[in-house]
Length: 174
Image 1 (cartoon, rainbow, N blue to C red):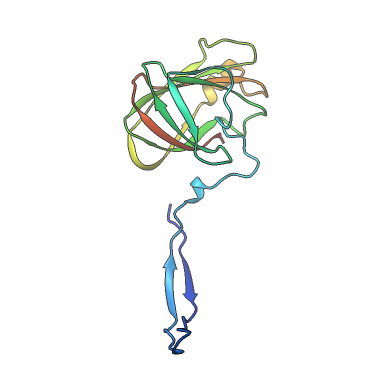
Image 2 (tube, helix red, strand yellow):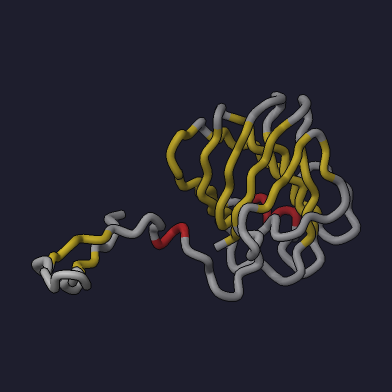
């Protein structure tokens, strides 16, 4: 996706002491955030607040909206539970990330009141030095589990290795 560039003409600068003026200049401004990186109004981000256990990892929110955070694994079974306050917008999990290492990203889909069990999926997430988009359609497992209602749970497992740092932005079901 190309970033939209804006052209802006800057005003003339005037030296207050001698009255000399600079010429007007036109500059091209390229935004640092892509459309994929912007906050989605009204979205329920998956880890905006976690529910229950946070195991062998730290989770640090980088923004007040809690749509961007840093995960640092500290053991061989890093995971977090999260509960949906509302129904997800869709069945494809999408997020932007940077990661120091590739990982086996595992999700357990748990309808309200159920423990982690047979409804899980593992997907490899490659290492990435630059912001990269992860997108995976979980519709088959979601349908099988009957998951996706308000109050349902997820367990997100971030690999099986300590000392992996992952920055995540805008994790949501679309």
